[in-house]
Amino acid sequence: MRATFVASEVGNGLRRNLTMTLAVIITVAVSLALFGASLLVRAQVSTMKDFWYDKVEVSIFLCSKGSDTPSCAGGAVTAAQRDQIKADLESLRPLVDEIYYESKAEAYERFVEQFKNSPIVDNVTEKSLPESFRVKLADPTKYDVVASAFAGRPGIEQVNDQRQVLDKFFQLLGGLQAIALLIAGVMLVVTVLLIVNTMRVAAFSRRRETSIMRLVGASNFYIQLPFLLEAAFAAAIGALLAIGSLILMKVVIIDGVLAPSFQFTAFVGWDAVAAIAPVMLITGIALAGLAAFFTLRKYLRV
Amino acid sequence: MILFDHVTKVYPTQQRPALDDVSLEIEKGEFVFLVGPSGSGKSTFLRLVLREERPTKGQVWVLGKDLNRLSNWKIPMLRRQIGTVFQDFRLLPNKTVAENVAFALEVIGKPSSHIKKVVPEVLEVVGLEGKENRRPDELSGGEQQRVAIARAFVNRPMMLIADEPTGNLDPGTSVGIMKLLDRINRLGTTVVMSTHDAQIVDQMRRRVIELEGGHVVRDQTRGVYGYAR
Image (tube, rainbow over all chains, first blue to last red; front, side, top):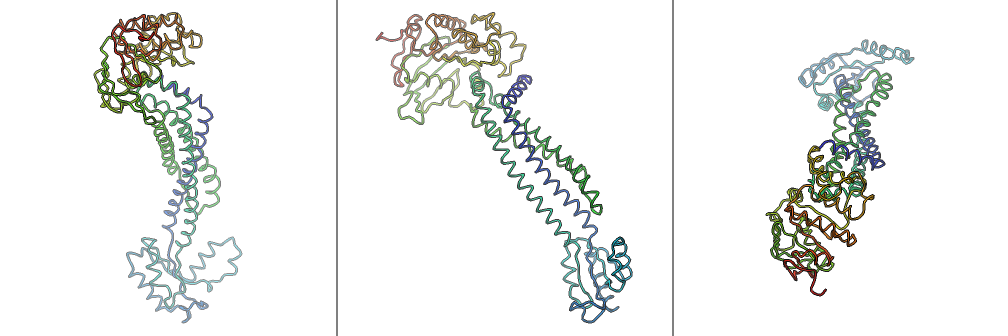
C-alpha cells in the first residue's frame, strides 16, 4: 500500500470533481445537522422527564364548602373522611412513595409565594383554596391506580395528575422530534442518492485510469480505495460542519435563549452534545462509505 | 502457457458464437500471430486469455491456471503476469512518459525505490531514454506505442498480449515496434499478437493462427499472412 500515491489520487479526484464534492458536503451537513437536532430534542425530552417526574405529584383535592362536584354534595370534607383517605393512601405503599397533607393555610401560603408578584393574590383568600393530599408515586406512570381508587369518592373534589399536563408538553416535543427525524431521514436519502451519482460521475470521468489499473493487475481494493476515501472525506467534512452547527444550537438557542427564560426546568448539557456528535460523524461516514461501495461494485467491476 | 480446450464463446446479445469449439496450445517463449478478418474472434480470444470474459463452454488455461476456477480476487494477480498493448496505446494524457510507466507499478503497490530503479531501465529497453518527461501528445505514434510497451513490460511479465499494436502506425514505424516486440520475445516473454498487417507477418516468419468465423482455419509454425495474397 502506497499511502502517498493513494492520497494524491484522492486529492486529484476531489479537486476535479469540486462542485459535486461541495454538493455532497452540504447535503451531508444539512441532513446530519437535522439528525443531530432531533437527537438533541430527544435528549432534552428525557432530561426534562427525569427532572419533572421526580417532582410531579398526584394531588387529591378535598371538598370545601363551595365545591359543586357531585362527590362534594355532602358539603366540606369531614375529619372522618379525611382520616379514611389518609389510611387508604397509606395502604397503597409501596406504590405510594410519600404522602403529604396540605391544609388550607399551607395552600394559601404556597399560593402567595408562587404568585407574589401578581395581582391575583389579592382575589384569593385562605378559605377559597382547597385542602389536599399531595402524593408522590414510586412509579409516576401508575397514576391510574390512585385515580381509580379515589376519584369520585365522597369528600374528594378532584384527583389531579400533574404528569398529564407535562405529558401533553412532552408529546409536543416528541412530535417536533419526529418531524425533525423525518426530514433528516428524507435528507439522508437525498444524500445517499447524491453520493451514488457523484461516484458514478467520478468513476466515469476516470474510466481511462481505472481501465489501465485493471489491465496492469491492480486489485479491486486499490482501484476503489481512492473513490471510497473521497466519499468518506467529503462526508466527514459535512459531519464536522453539522457538529459545529449542533454546538452553535446548544450555545445560542439553548444556553443563550431558552435556559435564561425558562429557569424552572432543566436543559440538556454538554454531555448530550458529546454523545450525539460521534453518532453524527459515524452515521455520515458509514452512509457515504456504503453508498460509494455499492455504487463502485457496479461501475468498477473487474 | 495458454491452452484452449474446446472453447466456445457466445455473447448474450448474439446468436452466432464469437469462438466456436476452439482448441489450441501456445508454449512458453513462443511468438504467435493471430490473424483473420474483423469479427473472426481475435479480440474474443485475447479477452478470454485476460479473463475479461468467461467462456460459454470449454476450458481456458493460462499460466497453469484454469480460468474457470480462478476466483475473482485472484484475477489481478493473473493480470500482473500478463502485459497488454493496444492499438490505441491507452496512455494517460496528463502524465509524463515516466509517470505513465510508473503508474502501472504504483497501482500494484510497488515501493517507490523499486519504481525509481526499473522505470529508467525499461525506458532504455524500448528506446525512449531522454524522453522521460515528455507528455504523450508530444510524442509520435510509434513513440507512444513504445511507452505502452514499456508499461506492459516493466513488470517483466511471462506473457505479452498485443491487440493490433501497429494498427495506427505507418509501415516504417511498425517495423520498429516489431523489432521491439521481437527483442522482448527473445528476453523470454511469450508474445501473442493479433494483426491485420500481412507484410509484418510475412517478414517475421513466426507461428500464425488464423481465425475465421470463430474457427481456427490455420495453425502454422513459421507461417505467412495468407495463401491468397
